[in-house]
Image (cartoon, rainbow, N blue to C red):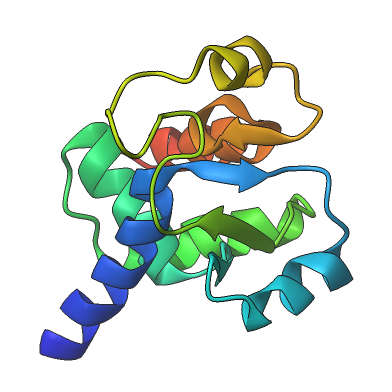
Length: 134
């Protein structure tokens, strides 16, 4: 169980920051893993979906729910790899904690850095988890 808590916390850290580049290729997503500024995560995992169930819905999922979520993710052909900026939220000034006006202006234009929950990937993952709620 301790191992699963560690893995959940890794995915949770990435998704909690939420700042991701949505228009990278799959190869680009995997290559960015070499950067200390970005965390590359496989989104089609139990850990990523456990974060969605727990944080978005407040539900602790069963193994069966996680298996079904991952299978659905793969069946739908959703993006598997995503890169998250891991030092601070890109749309927020790290020194003041205030929203960055430039970042806020572009945070929902789907052309660069976006919040995970605002992307097609985030919305699809939330929908998959919602469809499996008891």
